[in-house]
Image (cartoon, rainbow, N blue to C red; front, top):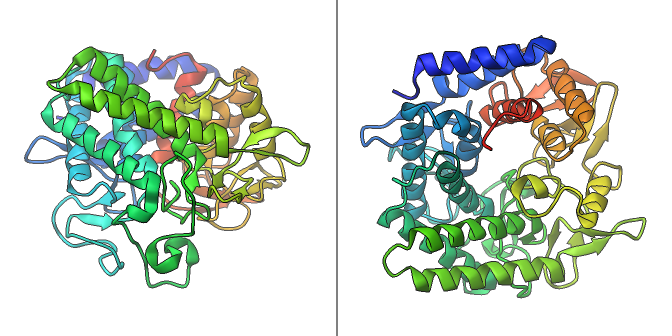
Length: 427
């Protein structure tokens, strides 16, 4: 049983009452909130949980966390739902121990996915694009489940083995020249492969950890992806808290290694991850290489620069973040589009002038202005293409043009913003 139906029904009735002043939000919320539970989650024979992204028959480490995160509050009282989340954490950790460089996995050892890529594939791996955030998200989910519900059943030896593997992987990737990871794909789309015989563009040591790909699954131009390093700093802080409170056997060495890594990455961001916008304000760069090259932009996938306070890296009112936010939500960001129906952040991953509901939700989740949150929720509902659900992206001049008919992550980000608007959620 994935969840307890009476508990879920009572919760949805509460949301319906809350959204009586915005019935269109309530309707979309219920569709999206139940769709993920009813259509994307499978409980496997070993009791673990497998979560589809939607219209792609694989599980992403990143997406599966984001899809489940809005259920954490309900998991405080719904033990079946809590067990489902515990099962997902177990499955995520097992996948990471199988290969910390893979980003998406098959439900079974069936050889589906991108098996022709020039990298070390197995039948369990759907795709092996190495993304720092793929290792961040399971740590975030494990920490938040504990903090929100008090659950500690997932803090067992296999979890700490996974944590140590993540820390060691990030330490190796501080010096990517020493890494065993290579990736090339036979394609005309440069965003889907790495240059330099699969090693990626050149970079120098910065203390940050290297990423081959962005959370959009598109290749990094400069391989120190600042939002992902921000996220790594946050989740390494979570690991430190877990180790200090749970005190697993022999934890001191891992604790010290984790602290050193967190501090090195954070210092790298502060030393190499800042630049100036067109107005001369100090802002966060999106990517850097430690050789003096950097990009001013953002991508709508999370982690993003726009999402820095949402991830917990900085305060919403931090002056560098505010300057970065103004830059991202302007034409200085080459992927910021304005149109007849909407404006927002697009991506190299989707078509020109298509913006992402995920990024619109992050806009709302990183402001304290309730009217702005309401405007964004109205915009997301109005631009759903008449489908009653969210999509990967849509055209700013014609919302009936969109990518991905079924995208569970975007659905759940809409739900998260609704919960935020009404003061519901994990706290």
